[in-house]
Length: 384
Image (cartoon, rainbow, N blue to C red; front, side, top):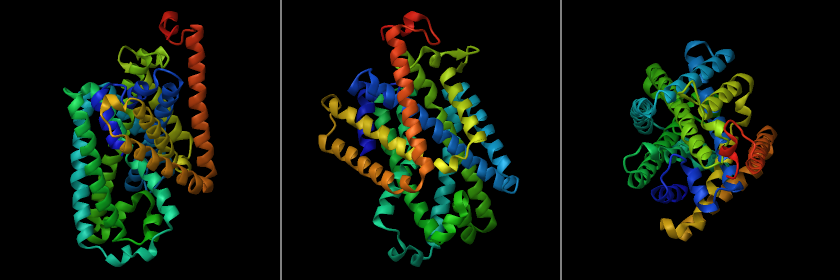
């Protein structure tokens, strides 16, 4: 449902500002759009850091016998490398991402087929399923896996015909990801017990490949995980430049966010990368791993709420938009009352992220009203 909303919006308002352009179309260039912008920036930062840590975990397991120090080092190096790739230009980003996607998709298809053909159906017995409440809560967590489709909205500036290509890309990405994820989930849980999957942690896919493909399968999936997490880190950093440029242009972000350091390095990207390195080196991100999904749900609901206000321009069906908001809302509330209740650190982190985003928006709103320059000339920020 969210994909439908984004696709309709993207066809009507293609922009480098991505989903933030959609919120602005519905709510105008005011506080709601500003708050959503800071939340989106914060969510991308957090998700990018967490995915980089996953890369570090796999790399450390493969090369340094699970050294916790090397997990952080590998994660930080990945963020730096992907930042430099983004600075090199969208052409190089697209080429690198294409290679990553082909490698990952091919390997995952092989893995899914191999495990599905050799799985033990008894491991999928419904009697072993968790409660409905826990299942609904886990649905909220899957939004973390689908955050990438929101990144698609920021590619409009690089598409020859965004009004037609963006919706196609959106539905194709969601369709392929859904089929592959379901096949992999069946293969993993049809090969390993729930207890084994949990104990394996982030290397569960590699462990599940061993009974079928042997040690080669373990390494194959581990290398694929490195490619996958590297691609996800790249995708998390990619929107920063277009988002900051567009929002600084419309006055929603301080002009400093659109500056170029040394004439080439986008400040918005540099800040995100630097903050990501600080997060992976100084914090235990596994304790707040669920925050990315919670913030994503909030953002998706805000985008679709904006869509309701301009649906006559996009041609979207009212009932589908209401269903999109309703399902996301139910998932968010269930997530809050189940997962976050048992994870006080995550609950506190969610409140801090929301408060920080709101604080940044209030600060910039006041700066705009008083004409205080922030990284730009006074007339660049006054009167916006």
